[in-house]
Amino acid sequence: MGRVSTLLNETSTFVEPASSPLLLLGQGRDLASERGVECTGALPSPSDPDLVERARAARAALGDRAFVLGHHYQRDEVIDFADVTGDSFKLAQSAAARPEAEFVIFCGVHFMAESADILTADSQQVVLPDMAAGCSMADMAEISQVEEAWAVLEDAGVAADTIPVTYMNSTAAIKAFTGRHGGTVCTSSNAQVALRWAFDKVGGVEGTGKVLFMPDQHLGRNTAVLQLGMSLDDCVVFDPRKPDGGLTAAELRDARMILWRGHCSVHGRFSERNVTDIRAAVPGVNVLVHPECKHEVVNAADMVGSTEYIIKALENAEPGSSWAIGTELNLVRRVAAAHPDKQVHYLDSTVCFCSTMNRIDLPHLVWAMESLVEGRVVNRIVVDADDAHWAQVALDQMLALPGI
Image (cartoon, rainbow, N blue to C red; front, top):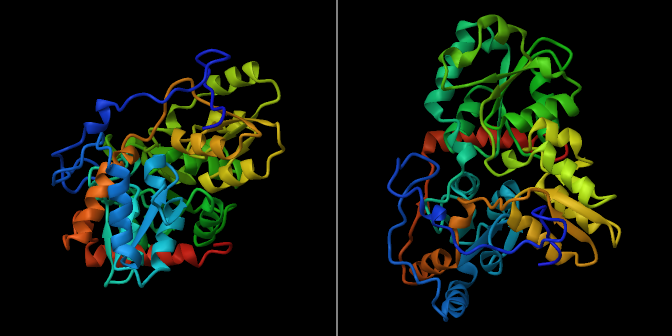
């Protein structure tokens, strides 16, 4: 796995922990939620010595009928069986480019599988190996809350001058809301382009129009301030748990960026202290973080970019260079293993896996594939037809942006 080290002490090396019972949380909850739906069926035991061979046999039996997608944050045991590895948008695009595949097995989280269902043909069936693999960030913007927020903007007299932009990490219902209101979807790599497009619809970056950015406040703030030249004073945070979002009508009228109060539970853990400590421990280290990190962390880093950007940055780095990376640990471990000629450190001093992404493990993947071999489609993801239509409007708008 390369030299992935933490700051538990200057010489410590990360040791992967045993499976945590935390990963078992979330069963039997709201079926409409991104997380918390029970996985039915008897799963193979993770200690089954034949598990890898069973996976190979099921994958071979499915052949071209199945297309397996693996997100960068997945475990290595799952990535080993992926036909394509990438971020959420790349994987959805890859699924759409394989219309001959009867089954798309999406090893990611729920919102990603929804996007794949929207972008693939009606004849294709999208399968999520564990239905409890959700996204806490996506859960932070529920459609009823967003509709109520829009009503608040209407009451304040600013809705007509506001364009919604939703991050890819959102439910199909939120993407559909965005499409219905003339907005677009964005990724962490094209957020700047998407925001410029949105502001251009309401008078430009230098004008008085606004963007409602959901659900990750940090990506929205970092993009607006660091890439569009806005100030922190131009940004307000809409808290759906407070009356009127915790904002006055005057604050909404003065704002340019109305940021939803949401965040990534992984990237939100990194702190400015982490950056200070790694610089003291590793002189000359390059600090590279994801734009979902807090503003002060991004400001303290040397480089900021999406998962794809992080991977390419390490590919192009000089041999012998030192790097501290602030993103999900599975990705950092994989990057470190791919570049043994570089020193790759993990930015946080504690373990930071995406717990919901890690619900997709080899037993779930084997169960899903063996079920398909037996003629049973399990855990199929189907987006409501009206939501799918309007979500695709928003996704198509993103695809029409320059540079996509």
